[in-house]
Every structure is written in structure tokens, then in C-alpha cells.
Image (cartoon, rainbow, N blue to C red; front, side, top):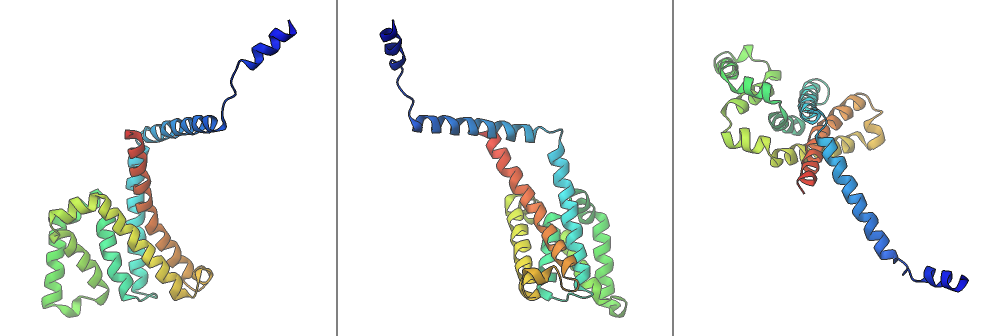
Length: 211
């Protein structure tokens, strides 16, 4: 009886380590897909989150634009914030400024700049340029580029470039968070990165869900 018992135990072939690893990897893949599906099905929160981060990024860029006119004068920074705002502006504000309201604002800005230059202060140059960009930009840039991955990558590149330039100008990462006005500038630039990173995460999650 004992010999038969021992023979029955040895009938089972041992499972290889490679098979176990592959099985675990498959289970992890299934769990990741389920997690992505659940994340995408959370009560429309992702769409709301995208809109929120668009507002956050736009206001951060406007905040940095205001700082540029006061205590952080860098022409390079100012010129890069304009396309960033154009690409990250929420659809509601974008449609408003691209419509009749924006056309009237652009018209008044051009008239003041041409015929009443003394009543057109320097700090309105960049906002005026932004309004003109919003109004006259072709549909390819206003919709195809702005709503696609190209616009997201441009925003990410602008945010990364401004962050490294700010750190270098401050004399290092530590100084960028300790010097006068360094903290506010650093936080503002970091907020520029939140929106494009969020959009890229959503894109890859949706790709995982489709597969």
C-alpha cells in the first residue's frame, strides 16, 4: 500500500519555473486591463478631470505671464506661454474667445495699438497677441493640433523646457524652491506639466482598454 502511495505521488510532473512566471505575468496583465477598464468607467470623472486640469494649466500659465510683467522678466518665457495657453485653454473659454466676443476684443486691441498707442500699456502686448492668435488661427491649429496628441506633446515640451530653464537660472533645483519668488515660479511651472501628463495617461489607459 505504501509503495502504491509513493508511486501515485511521483506520477505528477513538476511544474517548471518558466511556466509559473508566464502564468503570473498573464494574471498581472488581466488585472491591469481590469484596472484600466474600471478607471475609465468611473462616473465620467476622467472627462471632468481633463477639464479641471485644463483650467488649472491655463490659470498657471496666465499667473506666470503676470509674474513675467512684474519680477521675472524673460522674453523667452513669455513667448512660450502664449502657445501653451492657446493649446491648453478649456473648450468653453476657447469657443468664447474665438467667437464674436473675441473678435470684438481683438478689434479694440488693434485699434488702440494703432491709433492710441499711449492708451495701450506694454503689459497688454502679450494678452493682445493671445487674443489675435485665438481669433485668426486656422482650423487645423485650432482643432486638429489643439485637440490631438501633437498639442499635448507641445505643452509637455514647453513645460519641461521652462522648468529646466528656471532651475538653471535659479542656480540649481534647491535654489529654485528657496530663492525669492522661486517657490511661486517653480510651482506655477510644475502645474504646467500636470495637464499634458494627465492627457498622456488617459491616452495609454484607453489604448489598454481597446486591446
